Image (cartoon, rainbow, N blue to C red; front, top):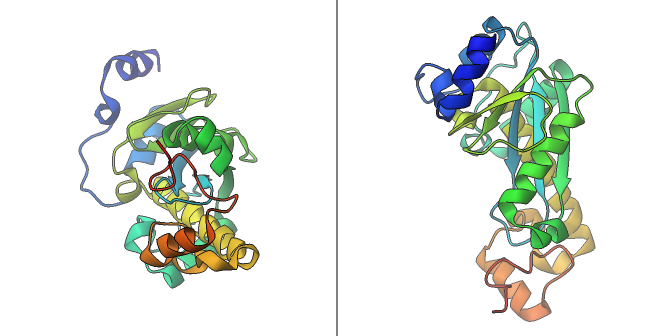
Length: 221
């Protein structure tokens, strides 16, 4: 274990693991377990790019004996399939999610807000994870466990893929509900991204409290 920790401290993000094909599987988690870590969580977020709404992060610890079939990067799945897998993940796995609001994004930046949401999601799990696989290049500060960033992790790790699905479905549901409060913007169709309909609504009605005023074209220099 001490040797593993020393190697992790001096090697680049993906070097802890062999170079697996770019598709989600459970070998990253198995490698961590074989290295002495018992509970491995996948972390991912949804909503870095939209002009409105929160960024939502999820943490998922899969049960290796009950992994739902068909887990994949949420972006590669149709909405109906994500909904089915969302229910399957919640019924078989340990799951938590957390958000960073538009105001928090404005007060810091989208990177910092995304990492903060992932940290909160991990801490909200009903058990303490021993190790976290984090989608992307960055590891949130203060996770409370060993972690490793995994570039394109949602297409390589089943735990991260599951977290990507939970984060995406949760955020889409939040934006659909927001559409009933702010009906002018069509949030239920574009989820806050910069679609033409959205831009036209902002031009006609101005921004609402969910808009990220530091994002262009909302930002006024």
